[in-house]
Length: 248
Length: 248
Image 1 (cartoon, rainbow over the protein chains, first blue to last red):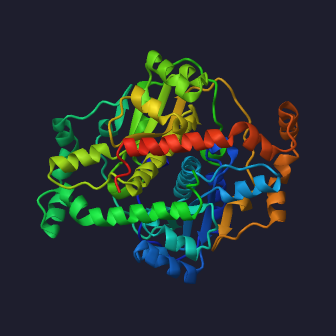
Image 2: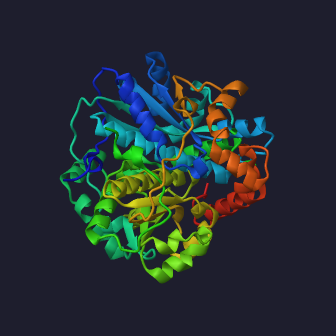
Image 3: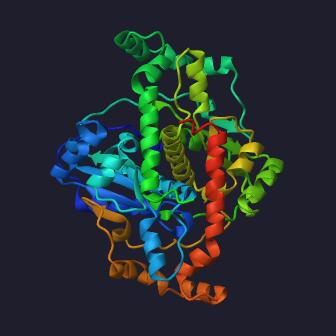
């Protein structure tokens, strides 16, 4: 019998009813049980249920309907502010305003986020991560009034599912697992790893809809275009400086 | 009845027996079920069981005994190399060699890592994350022969536990959860959030051992000293450039 992890689907349609208070608390309590660097808990979880505020956040997530339809939006932030504030109140000298500690905080934040999602799914809730968070982190930071030392990393929408999508395919396990050391791929191996997906009916439909010769071009020419990638990359790095995570 | 997530303890002493092959595979399969940006799976999991190779990795983790004692060491890497290679073979133009996509890949990698750990704990295995990975990522990359576009993010040691540590304390839930927006802390709130931990017997013992006046100083003067933090911060950022994740 496979565990709940094998049943994960991203849910993009939600029923309107709220998450019961005790259940939400249980999920948040599960989140903070995740491993954390030096037990410092360098993250904050911002739980937004207010409709008007979710409507303000919606454009940051390209107006995907789930941001206003799901009853609960959790913005997951790397946070060195709280810990640094404590240090300063104790006349200790905190040195967490640099890139290395941003990465420690991101790690803490994402492990807690995944625990939140796993616990939620154990109780019949559905979740979806919003990668758009990294593209528009500056706007999100303004709406949620994040101080220096706090920066959005990802967002999770949560609620009771109103759809039952099928399991998404994955590359064969040997595509992502290496034994002992990293073994680089041959061109033939790359072809083989993607073969099943490239030959699928879904891919054929995508190519027809997009008028493109192959699946890789759907990614590079439609979904994640070079100029957009560079623009969001630069703007997030700029925000990192603004929020005081790059004082090195 | 609380879920397995509430029972997590970091395990630092392991029994020598190996993880059964099918169980390890089940854990890895659970890892790849985690959410991933655009279903791109921008990570690699490097499973090192060879004793000689674990001994080579040990100094990268400050010779913590668990790296050689645990039967299995998984180095979790952000990986845009595999996907970019596929794109180039299809005459598509991949633009994943920048900071934004490093963060997408880190997110993918850490969600998969946490699934790996949760599944492992469901089956009675113990795990510990090694934050040292970020400090010595360049050495790890050499030992594991990582190509450009691949960079270590964290490491997990796994095996059957040879200890049963107590649950680690956490800050009160209200320390890390904000409702609607981020509410900044008052000085009095910070005092209150840390009060219980500061008054604990463990803290008193730490202060005596270290000859320091308060717990915050244990962090800033002993565990994570400014010069070390800045040095690892700069070296990881330099590696990020070397590995081609900062072509912006």
